Image 1 (cartoon, rainbow, N blue to C red):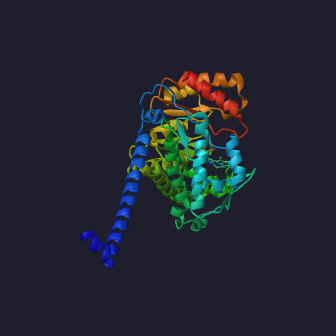
Image 2 (image 1 turned 90 degrees about the vertical axis):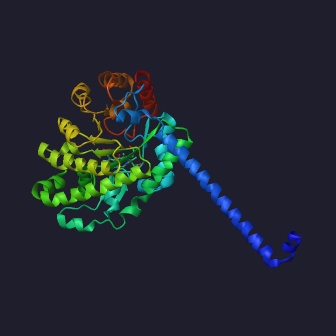
Image 3 (image 1 turned 30 degrees about the vertical axis):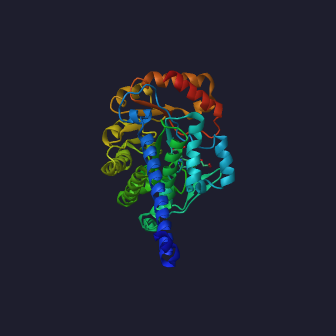
Length: 394
Ligand code: CP3
């Protein structure tokens, strides 16, 4: 009776149809939601799985020496060059989350490093603050130089968030990619340039040998120069926090030109800003390790280790590993420091250098790395040999 009545009543059947459709939509939504939840949980579980690289950063013992290489994603890899020739410019790739995450994964697929570093650049910060930036093939970065305090009014936070959103998305995608492709032991590193190093590019308008404009400004008008450094401290800390929010499990601060500073300048423009950034990042993420890399700092590495609050130190190639073991590694984990040109050269020199570094630092908290980025002309087979040597000895 009821059925019949329902069938014959157009209003009722319409209502029935509507509620059925509603239920269907609800269940699709429910299942996709729980599936997403399940996927997200699985990824989080994978991301939290024990990773030797993170264990070392937390000061724990591991059964092998973790390794990754600065600039491991880049031009020495044929698959990178291939993608680059199809994708257009470097910045187009860096701001495309799918491409940036693909490039980040390329070296991991080949070599299974213990850490992936997100494919981006330290100069996205000045770019996000409104400074013009382009990468000229064969010449490197070009920016419209800032030369005096008044020029700082050209910088602003108007488009900062939206400009950097693709980097955060690339980090999320890379975490998913690592998990989907089974690289459960590989951690993900976020990074930024330290204020001093980024300021040199902003002021010189590109690379420089003597940093004459930057240093002259800092010596003549430290107050005005401080305004730029303060702006960079604030934006860099914010940027690193957002990278961690997106899934970076540690962050590295690259102070590539710290070695150009005198001891007083080093305190003021390398140690102080790093200390402030560490404090700000730790306020939001107290347990995320921060690696400091004050390249070329020499003896100043000691003060940097003691005063900035970083959790680990990246050693450049010039640092004597026996000194580092005594003076630095006794205080915090270290990472480094094979000469990238030694990898390019290959052969016996490479074997000996790896033995020496592991012999001096392998007993303490140590992450094998280079002392600077891989050179673009490095044969891939030399990187393969290096990985084999580290695995055999570490
Ligand atoms: O390490 C990685 O694999 C992640 C990606 C990464 C890049 N740059 C990609 C890149 C990282 C961590 C950086 C850091 C960076 N960028 C630093 C600090 C470390 C260092 O090398 O001292 C500095 C100073 C820069 C600025 C920069 N970016 C310069 C001076 C150049 C031109 C010189 C060069 O090596 O080409 C770049 C370009 C750049 N950044 C490339 C890559 C892969 C080459 C782009 C290309 O032409 O394909």
